[in-house]
Image (cartoon, rainbow, N blue to C red):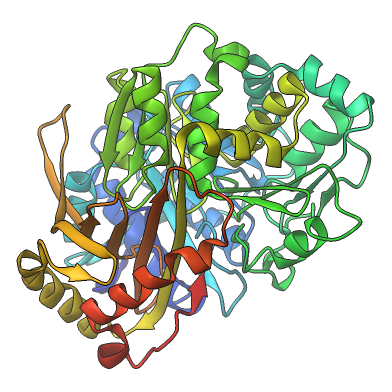
Length: 539
């Protein structure tokens, strides 16, 4: 039943910061999935001893790709696959299963927050034994395989029935189909005070959670409605769909507009939240109030003592370089470890494993802790609910009190999408060469204190990584430029604007960062080089 199939290489299978992401129609090309998976199997040794997790967010082509991977894993001698029922599993839940069961890794089929459908995006995340992203050295080895591959192995058996829980044999390999929700729910119950949150709901507290027709719908219903007692229907868009019902499953002010409009209306609930396609990102809202991911990370860190799981203290906190400095002020106040890393969740893993940090987060709506090795959307939502239950305050009250205590980092991100890759690379290279000349330069009320590439030196493995360019000003404001690694085509230039104010904390964020925006576009010559005079996405 096992056969070897001749193939030819594809040259575009280099993984980005979170695995391989491509347009669905690209992935549907002959042998595209097969080439990529065989390249992974070629790099992994002793497959006969290995157990992997397999599942995905249910997006278009997941079902077909999962069957291909099952057949190839069997043909390559993998000992066992653990698969989410019907092929479903969220990224956080998958990370937990890998970590707690000491698996050898896993394959999560998702393009995260990118849209789905035949005209959308598809992705594969390859996680290592920690349940986190694999290191760059390993992804480089896999890429070298993809550009030289000439054949792959596959079992020619029928498709596997993934609808029923239990264990079965397939082409000499063991397959265990599991409930993808059960273990994750049990983990959340160990971390948070479910009794206090349930009491808050019983006393009339209301929420709306938008699952965006993505994978966390079943998780959210089980936790918020069934266990915690939120009113039935509190979870909207709860059924995962291959095209996410036409939604772009990115929980931000642009793509979660229905939730935002609702939370800023007269019908708003006390609390609002959303997750992305695979459940690792989150957005937090109060009545007519939005909490930036930067502030959310800082607020969660400042209130760790309210959560049972962290009552004995936390090691420290880390953020991506592009994320605002809000959490740095909290870390200093609590005298805990603080780290700034490149964009990419894998950079947090060494810090977690070496017990340098407990919490971490990125401005792109990702927050997490060392309970797993991925960002975790529902964990962040439960953390906020636990704070609300413990304090009796509103989302706005908690946030404004935080600003009064620590000052406020006004923060906006501009995304210039679909830029020709060569144009984007040249823009960044020319900007980097210009940075030394900016030091001490005055732009209106802003004086540059220093300007340089961001270079991270990992304290655990000694590696160094350059990721983005930063212009810092004497008043604590910053401009950060970087190219995104999460798109499926072209390049996205991201410009992050941060303006710090110690006292003036209740102004409009866009108005406050507008002067920085003009500086950022002029210095990098973005309109002249890209033809874009406005950002495609502002968050």
